Length: 353
Image (cartoon, rainbow, N blue to C red; front, side, top):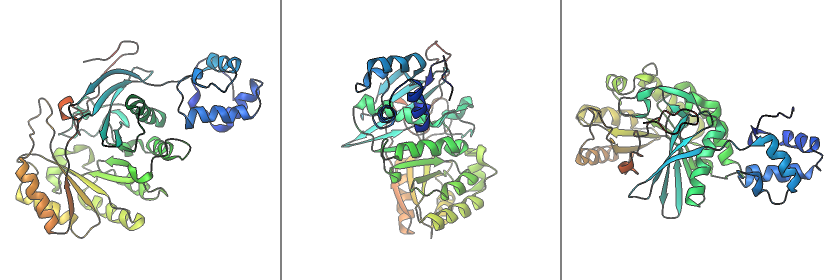
């Protein structure tokens, strides 16, 4: 490992790198373990916090390394207690993150990409396209930022913010494992949920993981022509192939995927659409989350009346399909599903419109 005059993020160093670093700086081996604990177990964001390290050692570290933590540009607080953050990374790219407290629990919805290439008709995130994928560290930093702001332990994380997680598979998996690590945030695997539009190769890879991470699929229609219009980015992954992949997933893992179904007035809430969803789900291991579409300014798509949502839940239940009507969180601050929108910023210039 070469020591650089540039201030690299010290959190990117492995345990072996830290051992080599402490040796180069003339420190005993146990300092590497202390440093590793501050970085990964205690989630330090400055060297001043590392009070059991000698001051001279901390100064040496600060000359060579930094902490590339995101900067909070804005924060909005919802009437329901949810908080939405616009966080900017060192290159000027920003993403939105949401913290959702419920009684003694704190869930965080994080982004895996800045923007999105999927182009779903009901989602604000993809309106400006994909800017770039995030690193695992940038994903975990979103969770740490929310935990620090609430001053609470995060109990669950949903990868449901901006971007398609399975289009950024390797970094998403690394983030999942960092969040799950016993010497890290130690969040249970079943409390870590990845939501995908239906990227079949990614679902197949996800099924091979040893950990029991949770899979959610944005379905939104079980009629191919409707789904093509709503979700053009996954046209090539047909419903038939998706159904086969999800069946293989449940057989391989024994785990139950959930299906997200945002109900849109006159689009996917008709009787034929409801029957198609029942046919897609019946006899399979799954859980359907029904939600009224969240309004997006300028969109012609409107939410279904609540009575239609309730009618679909009853019909699914009658056919042996577990279904829940999910209440949106943070809708008054555009923090609900589908409302997160990439904000363009420039380095050192703050948030854009």
